[in-house]
Length: 299
Image 1 (cartoon, rainbow, N blue to C red):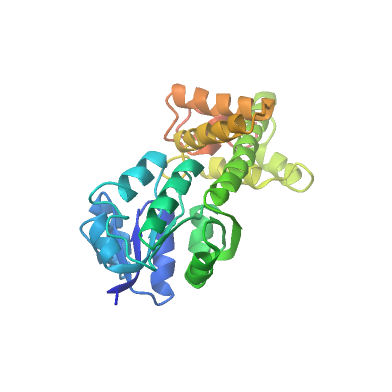
Image 2: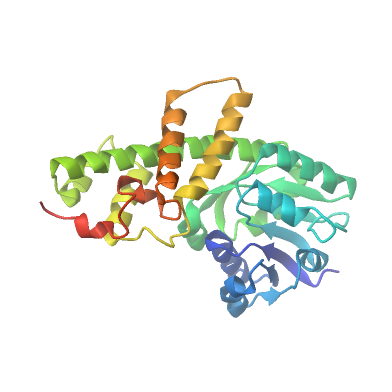
C-alpha cells in the first residue's frame, strides 16, 4: 500500500494552489520540487517532502505534476531517477502543464509498458481558478484512468472533461492558448490606443466591459494595470511565448496558416526581445513600464 494518497511535483503558482486544495480535501500528500524553498508553503500546509521525483513516485498511488514546459516534463519523467522509473501497475500519472502533445503520447506509451497510465490534463483558469477550485481540466488518455482520478481532480477543478486519447487534452489546450494569446494582444493594443488618445482607463473599462468588447483577458489587463501588478503574478510573457511556439507547431502540422496567430506570436516575441519577458502579459500594453499603475487615471 502506498504511503501517500497523492504525490505532487512542481510547486509554482499553479502547483502550490493545487496542492493546498488537495490537502484541504483530506488527502495525504507527498511533495517534491527542484528548489525545496519553493515548496515550503505546501509543506507548511501539511505536505510531506520527498527528496527526489523517484522517491515521490515510489511513495504515491497517484502522481500529479505541474511542470513548465516540454523540456521540464521530459527531464522529470524520464531518466534513471525520473517519475516513470519503476512505475507500478495501476499507478496513474497526471501532468497539468502545457507541453508538446507528441511527448504526452510517448510518455503514455512508456507508462503502459509498465502497467501504469500517463494522462495529459492541462487546465484553464489560472492560479486563481486553482485556488477557488474552479479550473476546467481537459484530459487526454485512458478513459478508465481518467475516471479513477476525477474525484481527486474535482478537489481543485469544477469540470473534468475527457477530450480523447493521449495528447488530445494538450491539442485542445493549445487552441485555447491561441485564443488567450490573441485576446491578450488585442487587449494590449486597445489599451495603447486609449493611452495615446488620452481617455480615462477607468471609464473606458466600465464601457468596454459592459458590451460585446468584453473578454476575460481585457478585464484582466485593466485590473492588473490598475493595480500595478505586472510582476510575480504566476503568468509571464516569456512563458506564453513558449506556448505560442507549440501552437504554431500544431497549426503547421495541420497545414494551416492564419494572420491572427502570426501577429500574436510576433507581439509576444517582440516583448521578450525588449526585456519584458518576465512581466505579466498585461504589460504587453506597456512593456517598458514596471509601474504601469502610475499612468492609470484621468488625463
